[in-house]
Amino acid sequence: MKSIAEIKQELLAVNIVDIPEALEQYRDDTRAGVINLVKSYDKKYAAHLKELERLDTMLEFERKYHKKGVKLVAGIDEVGRGPLAGPVVAAAVILPENCVIEGLDDSKKLSPKKREELYDIIMDKAVAVGLGAVDNRTIDRINILQATYMAMQGAIKNLKTEPEQLLVDAVTIPNVDIPQEAIVKGDSKSLSIAAASVIAKVTRDRFMTKIAEIYNGYDFENNMGYGTPKHYEGIRKLGFSAIHRMSFCKDVFNE
Image (cartoon, rainbow, N blue to C red; front, top):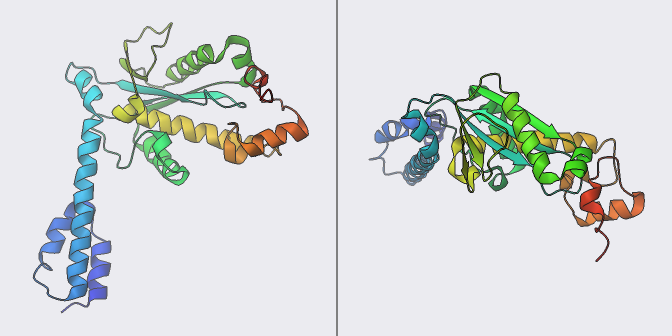
């Protein structure tokens, strides 16, 4: 008879889809340790099935177009409309049909560690990924909404494979010939848009972490340019940096 430790090691190596089959041989084992292992893995498998259901729901918009014969559907999202400093970044992501990436969701709902993990998976699985960014000076010149459109247009342009349909988080992008659908809270409803939100967020966070080495004292590596007490403290001590959005900062201390 296998020891509980041996069974535990065996189950650790089992692919999640094979868990029910792997547990069958241990369901009649009366040892408390084995009973607890079986319960634990039953719970893990149930969570896996629930996650697959969630992901299936998030493919509703993509499947609508796939059923019409549209193969290449790109999700588009942006990150960085609200910060006091740094660029606005947009991503466009084309996922393969019926793509499954467990844990993928709106980037705002994910931890930095989880976003980094998903970034690599998305980059590996995606048919194509495009990025667009607009710097703070351009934001000041044309305003954040127009800069957001420009970043999204850039992301589409930088896709190596041209999409046939766009799914966009919340907005309709001007001056784009490709058919598009704006989806309110799309990063929670569309897997492609969620993927774009993760790519855009990780890309921008990496930039802000790197730029913090040049413009230190503002805590950019932690606040990513958003208005936090340490960020405000840095501005008070050092003044504004070259990457601050002055159109966002002119009323910062008029409190």
